[in-house]
Image 1: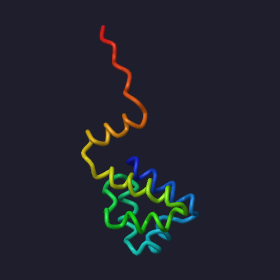
Image 2 (image 1 turned 90 degrees about the vertical axis):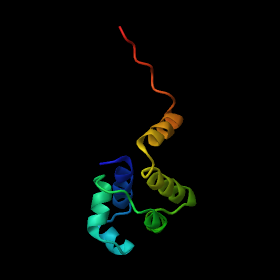
Image 3 (image 1 turned 180 degrees about the horizontal axis):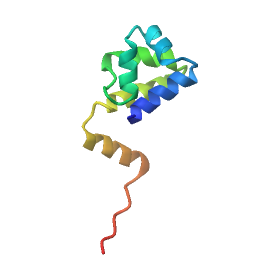
Length: 96
């Protein structure tokens, strides 16, 4: 499960929905939701905003969700840089 997939799964669960119920509310196939959660597929950029409105109350939560979904489309090196900016640089490895 990818980072965004975990975020989506947690949001669906926190809202009290199943994947099936969320997919029906979102008007998309259950397979799409399941594949995004399992990291087999990226969330369609065109659906992120509507999904965020179904799952979150505050604008800050919705924005964080949309940004996380969009970041999942970025190359791995960009995702790593963003993670480093959030947490600080990784400790250098000692050789010896």
